[in-house]
Length: 391
Image (cartoon, rainbow, N blue to C red; front, side, top):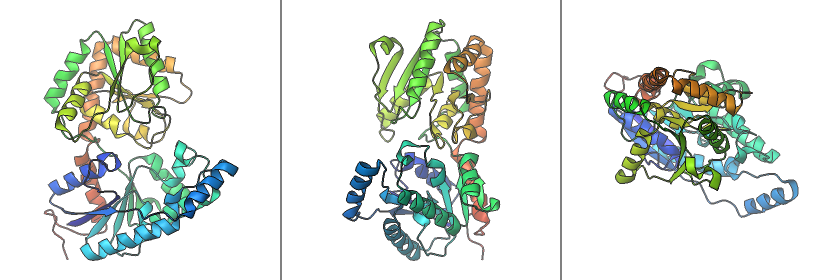
């Protein structure tokens, strides 16, 4: 089948949307599909948008969002229409629904996203205190996109429910399929079993913390968690990757800042893999998170994932199966105590680590994602097992 994958930016690049489109494309190719990449380019903004920003920011303390403006989206939509007309795919996968809103092409389209505009409002900082105009345009954008698409695939029920309730999309049109681990190489199960056995015998716990936006990712609570463990006599260290948070002198003994690794660089990617292999769990109690592929990546290495019960995270983390969730109303102290009970019983830790890898194998990988995505596509385009269109 001839499948177009469209994104703001090159969908074949590891730099686009945390390299999620890159992995989807690789697995679609493995299943015999021809892939057409559509790189949607944002037009130059009109001069008066800067004036809007200054006006609303200074006088109203509100934020004007240019990306939801119809004038911008219509220009992107015109490019989208031209590319689809020229390349004539059988189906179009749209990474994020936004750019579908003002298109006119008739080829079946499927949105792939981890959120809706409505579910981001007053949840992420960038979507807080928006102008009434931006809220109106953003919701209209997403409503038009959902109305236009043949199906919408979301990575969590949290996002799917927003599509059904906030945008009144019929339930059959919305599908929930968890995204996978954004790893260039995946260790095999036997390797992981060896990692787990080695970790369970170590005298120090290493907790891996990922994310550039470390405040939103819950750095303060992660730091408190590790402090509590050390005070309880459980020797622990917090390893920060992909960020450079300030670390007070009192905390430096149990914090290590690794900084940034470029996954596309083989040497740096190997260093990152070594850090993951030497860790015992991922600790990322994000305050807001649409999904979090990093939890899937942790599970691929047999690392339990410790997150917060918010947004799309519960789609990934199943309590005492592949990690723990910091529950609503639960203190960090209580959360840490639950983890200490697991670590002090090495059989419990090993069991949690083994089932973490099993969750990756069974549902949190791109092979499973693409197989399920293919079933959605079949509802709109018929093809045989070799990927050849059937007329």
